[in-house]
Length: 243
Image 1 (cartoon, rainbow, N blue to C red):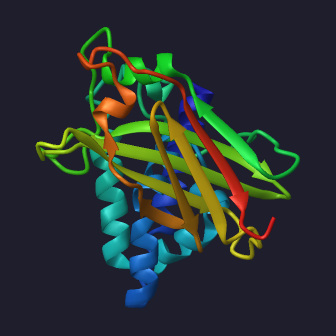
Image 2: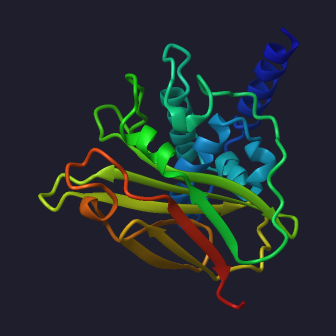
């Protein structure tokens, strides 16, 4: 019972903070909008976005349009009328407690992240019917291939890789990588991200936090010919270019 009260109070506090309406520039709005999906996902996972993403939260306070998008996304993804049994979300339904949790500590660069092929198999081939989160009603299902947080030199990094099936005859996954930090003064950028998954490999150079498109992933590179199995684990290497 106390836990439910804490959750309701935390969510209420967040909503009250968002009542302040100021202004935000078009450039600031565009930068914040790129991180919207990632921050919504973190909020639904129980992260206190006011602490972890203070810059983004400041944008929310100053932009009515961005705030409405954020609240709509929360309502769509966090409806208590839906039971979310998707294995890759690690819980039965979204947790709106917004309670800060301890992040894995990393001692030095480079950072190596991985997603087990079994988890990816469960993502694409669940053993039971699942609720898939789309960007809007009727949109294509979004598959979160990897979602990891880590802390290095007192800066918390949140990284996510989302993909959806292409409608083209090329049979590929359209894929985006999102990266956000809790530190506006982070000196790690620019950051080089290298991804390897089966026969697919790609590299990105991130000048700042935000969302960036990866080269499309051909299904033949990561799935068996009959598209019934995933070939390999997914590996990600993150290194500041200055290193």
